[in-house]
Image (cartoon, rainbow, N blue to C red; front, side, top):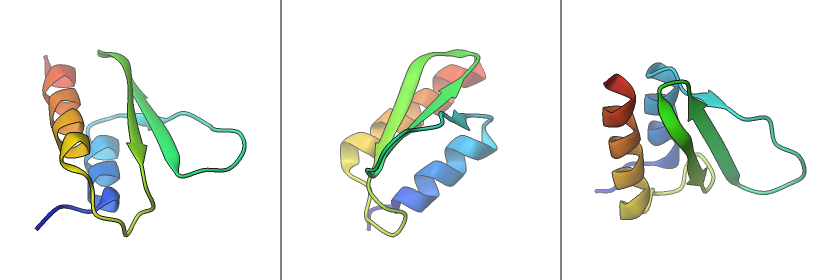
Length: 67
């Protein structure tokens, strides 16, 4: 069963990622970390199922920010 967008966001915040303030509307959120080059974009509303590529991207970002 896929994880939800809410769970991905929770993992990013717990690892020290911060959400970039956004302007306008939409369901895309960008998270940045001092030790991770670039940002992680998470699309979808909190209750939506996360796509497999989103789970991979978040997992990779969490691993890269730890080193």
